[in-house]
Structure formats: structure tokens, C-alpha cells
Image 1 (cartoon, rainbow, N blue to C red):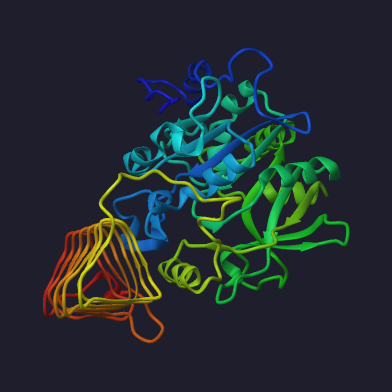
Image 2 (cartoon, helix red, strand yellow; image 1 turned 180 degrees about the vertical axis):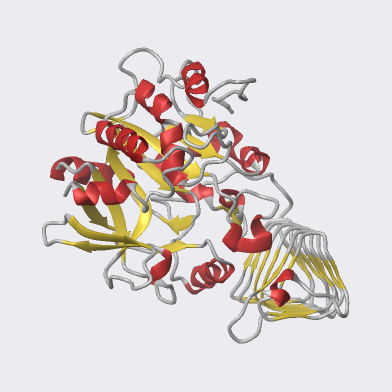
Length: 438
């Protein structure tokens, strides 16, 4: 894997780091680079952020590295879409728990992104020129911090993606639409998914011609129209110019925040923002409830099909033995990954590789991640159990809640409701989680 930004030296500025890094981020001989409709395209996947809304699930991992559907990771959707869209020049901008994501990316090979020229590049965090902080204050800050690298690559079009959404999309089609309408930015939109709160997203109102006439970022009073999917196609010169203008207008010590704070509103005000409607499933899984619901959708056939021959979601994984279903075990309407050993009952659940369900244990409406163990007599219902956790009691999220058990936790007493148990915690009778006091 190419780590394309070295650590900052003493007194080294972000600009100096960027100038150093451009030597390894070129697309090779002059003129090379992926083109769509004759335009050079660069893809940026924003894989930073601590994902704090997911609680204990992202306490020790980057959110894009979180397992989904048993054997996949959240970032696999964006990377697979890039591959199928014919866009191999992809930069992944990291920030938090880098090793948990780098172990998975494996130089981009699973997605055919390991190229002699271009291909997958991984950019660790850099000091921001506005705040001097190593961590970016938002996704617009991440773009600004890497503007020198983007400018040196000289793309015509920049595609900016998030890495924590479940969906499939042909980005090349969006790019062609973007070029046809002559927009400075094209944002992919979708109808608000059932059960979601519009105030969590960017809200848009669109003219009959497709231009975005109004935009509100996470409004207290939703606009009632479609929402953004955090897939953006920018005209590269317009993006860089707008970032520079916003920087000049930003007080010293303050960042640009997220895209919805100033960047997108600037394009909407200039009447240069257009919308492209996504026709298909899309879900932001940035909350435990949404992550749980996405797995329910997967089991019910409402989600994307992960193995469709025309557009499979690809991933990186270590081979294991096939799953073993013991005599007397019962498995219904579930996904059981390789390396699992099931002796008990598994109903409407997703088991990641290496999960053990002992005889007499019941797993019902649950998501169990790698190498977790459900002991005999335990009952897990409406819960997310992280890697290597051991469950020896009842864990029940209740009628509308979702219990979340952190990695390596040992549960020896009942867990109820929306309780979150921290990684490595030993949960006994009388134990309290941080959510009990919130």
C-alpha cells in the first residue's frame, strides 16, 4: 500500500508536506489518468472522523473499517463502486485509527486498484493550515488540507465520497450528467429512508431542471424534499477556487467545517449546484440503530444485493474453513459466514467469520461480529455484539432498542435496552454503562 504523505517534521507546514507528497501522487507520465467523457477524474474517499455516534463500535476502529453483512467492511461499497464505474484513481483520506483500515485495504488489490500509475493512494492526516491541528475539523477541512495535492494532480473532475453508507451507484453516469448540465457541483440525492430523521442530513429543494435552489444542512425544521447522500461531483477548478475563497473569508484559527456549513451553500448561492437522483437503496449507518436496521434490510431483501453478478461488492478477507452447523442446531433466515460453529439457534441474524454459538444458546435478530462467542444458555436479541466478545447471559435490546456489546467484553449478567458495554468490560450484576447516566 502506498502511504503518500510522510509524517510532518519539526516546524513543517501542511503546504510543505503537500509539496513533498506530490512526487508520489502523480499519475505517472504526463497526460495519464482516468478519463470520463474526455475529462480527467480523481476520486477522494473521506475515511476520517471518529464515528462517535456509533459509540463503542468505533471506539477502537475507524468507522469505514466496521464489518457489514458478515464479511464486508463499510468502505467496500465506495471502493467497489469505483471499480465497477471504471475509476481506478482513488485517494483514501484517513484520520482516525489508521491501522484498522490499512490492514483491510491491502494495496487496493481486491478492487483492482493496485496500479503501476495511479490506483489506490492512502493519505494519512496532515496539519490543517487553518487550525494547525492534525485532525481535520470536518470534511470540507479535509479537502482544503489536501488542495495542493489535488491541484498538482490536475484533474478536471473531483468525485468526493463518504465511506460509511450502504448503496451501489455508477459514478461514471453521475459524472456524465454533471458534465452535460455544466454544474460546478452535482450532489447525489435520495428520498429520506423509512425510519430516518431528515435533520441528520443535508436537505435540498430542486427546480424542475434539476438545479438545487435551496439547501439546509441538518436543519431543525426539515425542508421536506430529498436528502444528500454525501456523493459529490465537483468541477475541480471551481472546487479549488471556492476553497481558497472560503479560506480567505474564514477567521484565523477556525476551520471550514463540514461540506454543508459553507462549501455547498456557496455553490447553491451561485446557482451552480445540481442534483442527481439515486434510484435504489441507500442508508447512512452512522448510528447503532441504523447499522442494525441495515442488516435487517439485508436479510429481508430490501437492501443492495451484495453478490449480484453485474455489480458485486468486493472485499479483502482471510480464508477460513467453511461454517459448521452441528446436529441439532437450528438456523433460520440468517447469514452465517465461514469459520462459524453453530450448535444452538440462530434466527434472522448475521454472523461474521469465526462466531461460535454453543448448544442451548439463542441468537435472534442480532448482528454478531468476528470471533464472538455465545455461551450455552445465553439469549441474544436485538443486539450488536462486537469482535471476540463473550456472552454468557441474556442481552436484549427490547422492543425498539438495540444493545451494543463492545469488543472483547465478557457479559455475565443481563444487558437490557440501548445499553452500550465498553470494549474489554467485564459485565456483572450491578454493572452500569455510560449510557445509563446519559
